[in-house]
Length: 191
Image (cartoon, rainbow, N blue to C red; front, side, top):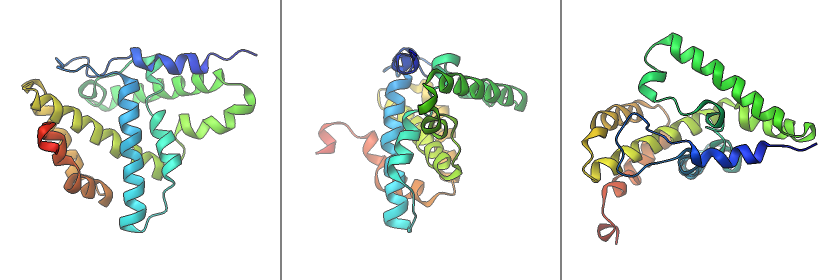
């Protein structure tokens, strides 16, 4: 049996994010997924080392790498549209679920049990960490766009920052306090 799964996964790089916004630096789903994986790993490590948690950083990282895989089939739905009303949000969630299962069925049967929790996100704590990392990634994108003078991201930055500040996860607040300011600095200032 031939499988098209990884050929589809490699197409993440063709799905552009922030499609309704003018971008100084375009971002695709593959780039975004890498950053979310790095951030999710950091959140898992922070949870364990600073707050006595027991998250598996490897599991969290892999889940983050695949967290937007369904967008290969659905495209990227802009956040203001996706969450504008409950009917659109719920309908899109159903479409994402169908896409996740379609991707899963592309794998050989013997691999599906391994990839099911990765693609379909069954663990609640892993999902929370990945969602927080996803929000951090969105905020970092906003900060970088604002740093480049793109005021198109001003409102998105304010809303996303507020969502992060409202997040109950202590590792998110630790990340904000410890690492976030550096993203607004220039390369020379990072010395």
